[in-house]
Amino acid sequence: MPHLALYTFGVLKSPLADPAPLTREFHESGGAVYGEVARHPGYIARAEATDRSLGARTDFDSDWGEWGEFAVPAWYGKGRTVETSALAATLSLWTDPRSAFDAVYTGPHRTALNRRYDWFERTGHPGYVFWWVADGTIPTWQDGVSKLEHLHDHGSAPHAFTFHHSFAPDGTPTRIAGTKGIGPKSDQVR
Image 1: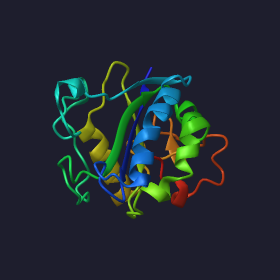
Image 2: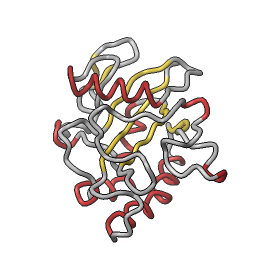
Image 3: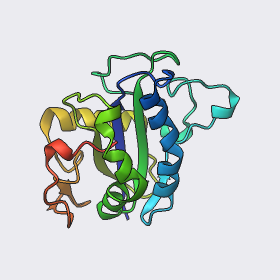
C-alpha cells in the first residue's frame, strides 16, 4: 500500500538564532507540535537528523540518514549558517491525506498554524506539497523540493498536490471531506 509523503517549507521573518521573542516563541513551540503530530493516527515517520547531539548546527550540515541531504527550494534566498538560517522545513510520511489533514488542522499544530503569518514571510510560493510513494520508500529532502517547485510552477498533479486539489494513489482526483473552504491562500501548511 502506498504512503503519502509531505514536505513543508517556510521562510521565517528572522533567523532561528535571533533572540527576538517571535522567533524564540516559534522555535520553542516545536516540541509540543511535533510530539502531538507524532501521536496522531495515520502518522508513520518524519525526517530527523541523526547527528544533532554530535554538534551539527544547522539543517544543512546535519546527517538526515535515509532522508538524504538537506535541500531547499531554489527561491530560498536567506542564509545557511547558524546565524543566518531563517527557514522551517519538515518531511514526513502518512497513511493517507485525511490523517494528515486532521493532524494539521487540529490541536497544537492548528494553534501554530493560526500564527503562521506572525512567524513566516508570505513568499508567494506554496508552503507544502504531497505525493505518493511506494510502501517501504523513504522520500528525500530533494524529492520534496522538486515536488514543491513543480507544484509552484504547474499546479496540482498526481505527483505533487495539496489538500484542496488531491489525488488518490492511482492518479484519480479526489476530495478530502472537510477541505471545502480551504483555498489556495490557506493551503500554506508549515
